Structure formats: structure tokens, C-alpha cells
Image: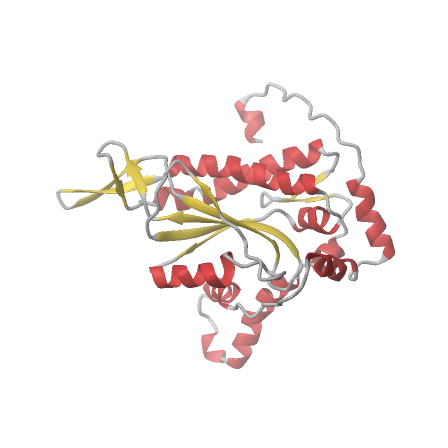
Length: 288
């Protein structure tokens, strides 16, 4: 999925980095998550927004619990292709005789931070892409503030590119894909109950607005979607220190039955097959 969160000032941006991006969801001797620069832009300015990419839960389970490292690499490859497409929508603001306009620049300064757990310490592979509020205007040879309207409109399109590229790789690895109408998918063979079990954080987010309405009935009828999104990003009380990687994997394995462990291990052991060459299709067929 792709979600966006705008940082309105440098103070909130700094807090977001220190509280969430720069630290792992578990700690081992004070470890921190290293960021990776991305984009044709080569200098940074004020933080503009955060875009969050994550694969389906079944992919995270096989990648992290069953330790199929190929799926982690597939996530990064799909992310890179999606971001390259996302960058094509980058533009800068122009002010001409009092009228607001924009010019497409197709370059951005961004940083990526990849995590492998949710705040509830469930397996959850995901990457935060931080876009800075600056793009190089080649026409004038200077940096200007972003005009991100088209970028925000393109989020669903870019999300579908990410899922498409990820699905290509997992099929090549031998997995079968079950597509969902909303555009994402799950891997066949991973029980839905197991995906639910490792989605504790999602359940917390789903349940929090209900509890809020019980305590504050005057909020009934308000924008609960906005409240839910705020609850999803505002709570940060999930710090668990001195938990090693081995202990984390033991925590995950302890939530599996022997049959479930054997089932997902068997999925990972499937033989990698060569990806068939794409067939030539008409535009109508490709859209369908």
C-alpha cells in the first residue's frame, strides 16, 4: 500500500525522524536504521512528505518468518521502479504575474528507510520514502519548492506499479498469486488466519476509533477516516529495547504451530522457475 503524510514544519519532521524513521522497531545494542538517498536531485531542503510502501502481509511472513531473502530483494526492486515512475510527476511552483503555475522537473531529493516489523513487533516489511520540498529547475538553474499536486494524484498509479513489479518477481520464484479487486494481492498457501495473527497493529488501529467514540460520543459523525489515520501515526509507545534479531525470530516462531511452520517453510522451498517472456498484447487486453 502507499500512504502519504505531510510534515508541516522542520520540528515535526525532526521528531518524526527521531521517533520512527531512524530507529528500528526492535533494538540490538542501540542499532539505528540507515537511510538511503534516492532521486535525481542531489541536495536537500525542508521535509515535504512521507510515502509509505509495504508488500502484502503474506509476503512479509514468507520473507521474514520463513526467511526467503529473495522477497526482500523483490520488495526493493519493485520500490525502485515505482519511485522512478513517481519522480516523473515532480514539478516546481511558478508565480507569474500573481498567477500560480508549475513546471515539470522530474527530479526529487528523497531518502528511504526500511523496517521489518510493525509497532506491535509483527513481521511487517515496509519502506518510508521521505521527499524533501525541493527540486532543481533546470530552466532557471536553481532549486525551488515542490508543486506536489500531480504527485499526490499519482499515488494509486504508483502503488499499482509497485504491486505489479512485486508480483512479477514472486511468480518467478514459484509462488502463486491471489489478486484482490483493490489492486493488491496475497500469496497462495499462506493461511489468512496467519496473516490476521501477524496483523496486531492493524487491529489496534481498527479498534482505536471505536474505543474513542465510546469515550467521546460527541465525535460521532466526524471524519473518522482522518481520526483513524492520526491514531495510526501518533502513537509511538512501542519501544522494546535489548531485543535481538534472534529473539525476534523466536517470538515469531512461537506464534506458529508446527503444521503452520512446515507449511510456510515448504512454500519457500519451491523451485525458482524462469519468468516467461511477455506476450504481445493489445492495449485493451493490457488494461483488462
